[in-house]
Image (cartoon, rainbow, N blue to C red):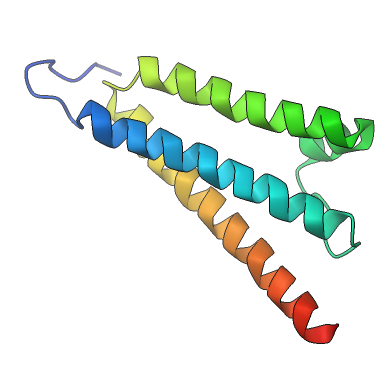
Length: 114
């Protein structure tokens, strides 16, 4: 995995930071919608690691989720000159977006039923 030639950046810093900010915003939306649905028994946490963390308590879950994605974002920022880092960050954003949209759809369906 070779770094990109620094004279011709693959993506500008501002665009990559925008991707990382989007990733963290989507993480917060996922956190909020997951907790909302989880405590209304409308959703089961499918990620076994996050399910275990959620069983340890809501405060631990919130702190763990925020710190883990924020830490990953900082790590990715230092490796922003690699194509794999940029592509992987975009793919993770797309995955988070689909999860958030699914959770919001479940919230919508639950509102229709009640």
